Amino acid sequence: MTQMNLARIVRGVFLLLVVVFAGCTSRQDTPPEAKGRVNATGAFVKYFGPVPPVDKGTCYGFVIYFPSAREPGKVLPFPFFSFDEASLKKVALGKLIAGMGDQKAYQGELAQPFPAGSRILDVSQTAGTVTVDFSKELNSVKPDPQVRQAVVNAVTLTLRQFNGVTTVVIKVEGAGSPLNKLVAKADESAVLPLAAPRLLGVTGMKEKGAANIEEIDAFFDRPVDIKELSLSGADGKKIEGDIFQSVFDMAGVLKAKTPLTLQAGAPIKVHWKITDKLGRSASGDADVALEIKEH
Image 1 (cartoon, rainbow, N blue to C red):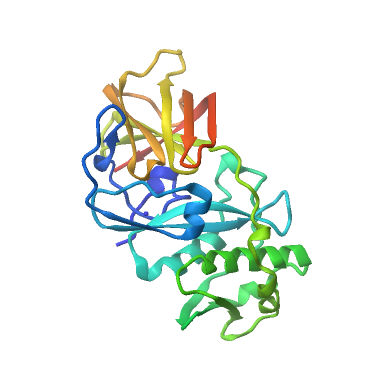
Image 2 (cartoon, rainbow, N blue to C red):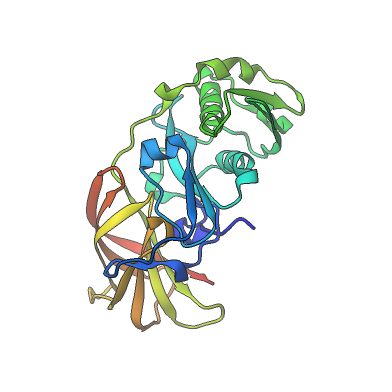
């Protein structure tokens, strides 16, 4: 989600901010009136619905379009958040070229067409034109027309969603790039339809240096309303505690009734029933390896 570490919400992938779960609101109780302000791009609202409220600060919800591995040339939209308006474009592009190869829930579905070492040197805007200057590694992108169009689609659509952006120019080390000729072909027809929301994983949270886990967070790939959520150990015994909804509704948070002595890699049985903000529903039961993080 200073950029905030929503890595805690989606294991360092879907969020770019540090979010403190002390700001979570209970599903059983009526949350206090939010004092923060939320701005979302039209693309975010189109694919994920309205951004959930925040308690303080001004938050920005936007989309990053990642190239599809299954349908070359196409892209998949994913939700991201930030409290730093000035860096939105550069942060979005940096995350785009870094890719999401560590997301097991989307394994085999996302491509990484950006050559290793690719970097964003500069992002500048004059009137409605945004110019992106990449490092020289981008010149090594595969010559396959679909791969090159996927790169351009991802960059162009990610930038065009921001207010006032009408034109995108792609450069490499300050010079013109052949990829820039493909910008005119980038449009919404390249965006694949979204399937139902998915469970990404579960993470146990504990204080730095502590032996026991205080809470377990079940992460989803977009803001959702949690209808049912229960977590059990390998023995099938339900882990008792109160369930809360996280900031941005990207996770279900189980505050354990008693501290847990679980180890990293321990199997957690997860039962969930969720609906995203546009009415797409999903449910399931799965054994998921526990990750552990300190805060």
